[in-house]
Amino acid sequence: MASSEIPRTVKAVSTAQLIYLDEEARACELNRQHGAGWLAEHADPEATHYLWPALVHRLNHRPEHSPHWRCMLLLTLRDGQEVFSMLDVLPAAFDRLAESLDRETKTRIARRLLGSMQTVAEWSERNA
Image 1 (cartoon, rainbow, N blue to C red):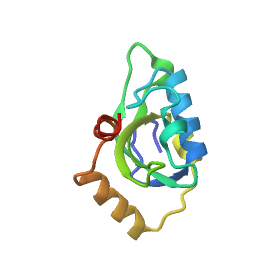
Image 2 (image 1 turned 90 degrees about the vertical axis):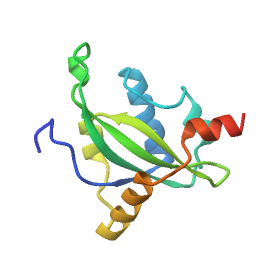
Image 3 (image 1 turned 120 degrees about the vertical axis):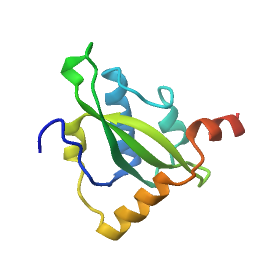
Image 4 (image 1 turned 180 degrees about the vertical axis):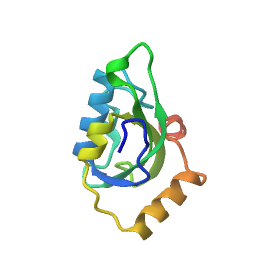
């Protein structure tokens, strides 16, 4: 796959994997919709979360991290609620994630991500 060709797949990630990807994004100064440590504090440590690359993102001022995938994230929180977020992920990191979901599950997750979901910002505002 060319480095600018976005993968058309949904991948399941553990909370530990998600926190690692979030820390990598922060270290590379990529986009995240939550502050440092937010996922460790709020993500359900036992849950499976889902990443779906939505678009190719380029940073002219950071060519060493360009392009990368801007992923939609279906995130399960400690209180059991599911929320929508975004996370920029380096292509090599996304490629290393296991391809573990069947087509039906990927389609169901994608539909949920494209539907009307509470966002991390909305959840944070309600739970401040």
